[in-house]
Length: 163
Image 1 (tube, rainbow, N blue to C red):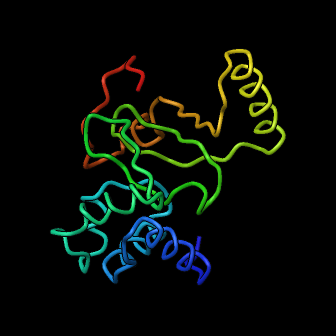
Image 2: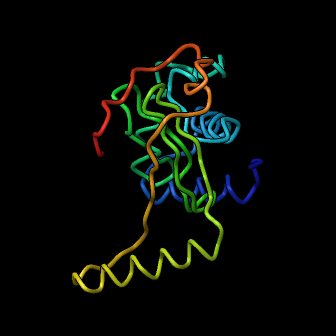
């Protein structure tokens, strides 16, 4: 997804509503998240974008998370992964490698997504619950780990652990 003026405007407004400014550092982080093209850890973000100041990157991610601009995914025992909030991008789910910790975005075909929405709404209604959204995480092993070609592995996720 490329950066658009509308995306910047939406993020600026969202931060403003939360009493925060859309500083140059925060804009650089957003651009780095867009360039990452999927959930990314802070160390990988900093390694790929040397201009990002490490001293403020984590604090800025937290501020943007609280304002609903950034989503933090905690699926591994290693570092959290960050991505732009789903309503700023598109509805998607994740494939999570339990060996290396890599998280990949996947989108379901609209017909399947609609069927799931209906089923989840019915389950929620039966429980007297008001559902707002859902996410599906599929755990397993990525192709690189299956083939033994992954290098620089992140800490493994304990098998059989649901988060």
